[in-house]
Image 1 (cartoon, rainbow, N blue to C red):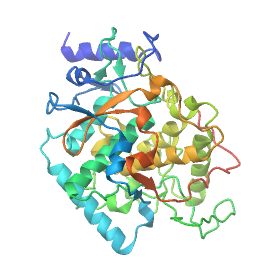
Image 2 (image 1 turned 135 degrees about the vertical axis):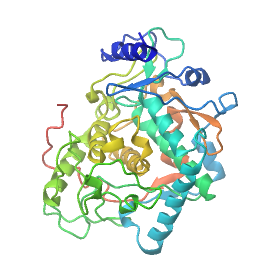
Image 3 (image 1 turned 135 degrees about the horizontal axis):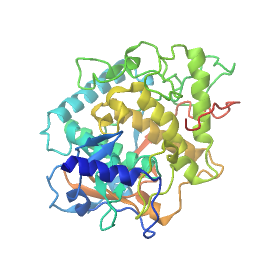
Image 4 (image 1 turned 30 degrees about the horizontal axis):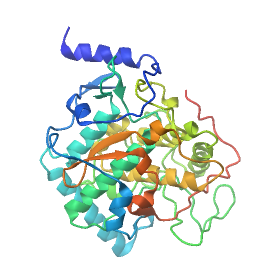
Length: 405
């Protein structure tokens, strides 16, 4: 039997049950040994090869505590809604973003800051390529469909943003967000016959694919997408279950459906598991059912990936497309918005969640170790989000059937 076939068999057996019996109660901890023992991953029936480069694996691992970094840069950066940038601000941001990705694409392929390696990192963490240190049974780690999803992606987008800052020599640069959940203009009557107003911030519909990522002459362009992002004025469909479904073309249909999806996703809160997903600890492994993820991850997160399609359809390739990072900045914002809704919406208090540790390369190619318990406050990272129609969907009268098919 070939080596790849053996690896595939191991993964199939490991993922055939949704949960393994806990060996012990302890947080998932990614170490230098984890990186060195990286194996081929497994996504959607395909074996992947996305282990991180050997560069700096023997160097220091420096603990990263966001609030300490904040002391050096006390002023908060504001991540803004892309649809509300205009004029000189839009022109300046577009030029910087495209220059940043041009420089990132030009880095050597083994540089952990390169766009290639950014994809490799996400692929390795998301395909079962990392095994739990010292645990029998070849149990792997995956940051999707469980309670690691939201904090891990917050960390990942943050370090990606720091790399862009370094390449641009601009520590004030912010990676703005694609406000895909907002289909309502403040000065217009929405599909429910209501007006949306706010005291400050941006209140313009943002449920269209960001145009600056569709310039085929720029570094933010990615050809491997479905036709949907290239159709002008096509609202994103947050209820999409199948990437091959035809485009939903009309806002009067998309807006109420999207609001209902968002209401279902954000109403979760009685039990942290509902919003964050199932717990994964030492001795447990990822599970196949998408329903094991939290409500925000299931829909709208997964549906946006399907709507973009192409590379975005797989964790092994999604981060090749630069739009991934602005998309996930909004997912991060929605976690922040969820917390502000109150009514027992709080993060897990389980020490095995708070103590989970991951490794990332920072803007200086230094390996940084970060705990989930240190990444719960976005202001500790030195940024905040521009106010938009943050919760216009919470009063939706009816919610669609968004249970797993």
